[in-house]
Amino acid sequence: MSGRSAYGQAPVALEVRDAAIAFGGVKAVDAMSLRVATGEVIGLIGPNGAGKTTMFNLIAGTLRPDSGAISIGGARVERETAARRTSRGLARTFQIPRPFAGMTVLENMLTAVQGQAGESLLGNLLAPGRVRREERAAIERAHELLDFLQLSRLAGEEARVLSGGQRKLLELGRALMAKPRIVLLDEPAAGVNPALLDFIIDRIAAINAEGITILLIEHNIEMIARLCSRVVVMAAGRWLAEGRPEAVTADPRVVEAYLGGAPA
Ligand SMILES: Nc1ncnc2c1ncn2[C@@H]1O[C@H](COP(=O)(O)OP(=O)(O)O)[C@@H](O)[C@H]1O
Ligand SMILES: [Mg+2]
Image (cartoon, rainbow, N blue to C red):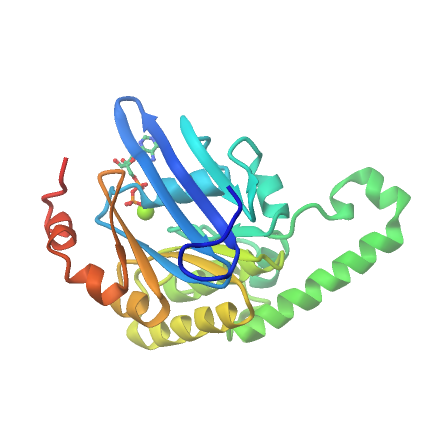
C-alpha cells in the first residue's frame, strides 16, 4: 500500500482501504477508503452520524476495523496499538476536549507526551540524567506551543477556567507535543467564536506550512474552503463524494445527504 498519491508526486502519508466496523447491527463505517498525500490538508465531511469520528478512531487505533487496511507512511498498521501509531508520527485531537480540569494548562500539555524514560520507575533509577533532560525538553516545547497558540498567559491556570475555544487550542497543542507528522483534527472549530475561528484557521495553516499532513473533520465550510485542497464526503458510513471543496459542496448528492436524505 505504499506508492504515490494519485493527486501529485508526494508519497502517501495515510491510506485507508475498504475499512469497515459495525457496532451491534450498525455499520458505522462500511467499505470506506481514503488517501492523503504527504503535506496535504484534506477535509473529511458529512452529516452527523456519518462515521467520521469512527474513521479517526480506526486510523488512530482506538478501534480495530472488522475488515480493511490502514497504512501510515506505507506501513500497514491496522493491527498495531494506538501508542505504536503515535510513535509513527500520528496524532489526533478529540471532538470534545476533556482536559484534566484540576491540572494547569502547562501540566495538561506535559501529560500529552508519551514514552518518556521518567514514566518508568526503572528509567528514573537507571537514567536520572536522561529523565531530567527529557523533562526539560518537554517543558520547553510546551512553552513554545503555548506561545504559538497564544495560551502562554494561561500556562499556570487550571484548565477548568478555559473557554470552549481555548480548550480547542489546548487540544491542538497537546496533539503537537510529540512532534507528529500527521495530525487528525476532529471539529477544531466547533463552538468557537468567529474571532477565534480566524486564529485557528491561521494556526492550522501554519502547522501545515511546517510540512505536517492534516486530515480535518469540520462542519464549518469556511474553514474547509480556506484550508483544504480536497474533501472526502461520508454519509451513512460510506464514501459519497470527493473533490475540491467548492465542487463537492455544490454536488446535489452531498446537499441531499446533509438534508437528511442519506442514500442507502
Ligand atoms: N462506540 C460506539 N458504539 C456504538 N455505536 C457507535 C460507537 N461509536 C459510534 N457509533 C455509531 O456510529 C455511527 C457513526 O458515528 P460517528 O463516527 O461518531 O459519526 P460522525 O463523527 O460522523 O458524527 C453513529 O450511528 C454512532 O451512533
Ligand atoms: Mg464526530
